[in-house]
Image (tube, one colour):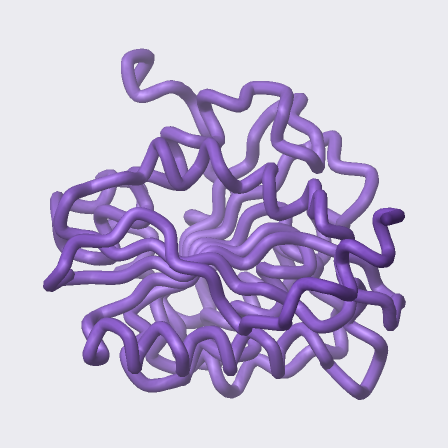
Length: 242
């Protein structure tokens, strides 16, 4: 049986549960990356999803239920916005499974774009957007009232750091509370400085859920007025170096 046959043989599920207590207090939905266009299902190997495994391990807490979204198609596919639809379905499934506990969305690249698109869904208390794909034409009105933490590598050649900066600024003007980190010399796959990416995402998720205080620079950025551009190019450095 070839790879495509193995993929087709697996029944589609909107989300797959990860580590989860019997009665979670919070939840995290992880949305992996993909491509701009592509109607085929992700392969059974699904390397973009595997890339998020170390993040889940870093963020683990016995009170949090973790789940991973699964997509019907590899691509966003223009106006179809397939990934956003699948993300919303995954979130609904997680909400049913957990009883609607406060949930943070953690997305990478294509998954970050989807997370931003569904940020206003019931139960979502924050979005962590890693190396987000942020086309300038994407809407931001749905982000009013949301809490958003962006992180982007300065050397990312797949998704534009400038576009995520502009989207972060637009989201703040629309009424979101926003901070954005820059990872000097990092790459799109988040393999370079991997520990820094994991630490940053964990601090953001735990802070957004209220397990512990947000990093001071993030809390300060959240308090800035709509027209401010401060707090949108924070240099990400290891916690021990602060």
